[in-house]
Image (cartoon, rainbow, N blue to C red; front, side, top):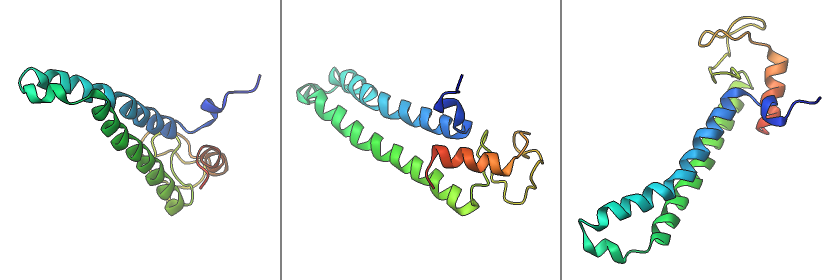
Length: 122
């Protein structure tokens, strides 16, 4: 049985993608709930449509998600793919087969670079 593409991606990439997506998903909810909470204190806010708050949250959330992806891509390009796939630590001076100083995972240069290339086209 072939493993899914989710398990083939580096764990660090999955974490960044998960937390960024949760941020984007919950921004409109938090904005709408905040508008409801402030509505009883400031009656003028009751006239503000929730769609406007949700649109603002989405216009903030998606650029943030794009920025996180671009930052990880730039970090990979700067280190030539020498990032730990578990924690994202810079492994530039680490030899092949040595453990990551941050999390202890064994660094395998070719396999790790292939995993990063599959997940982010850098």
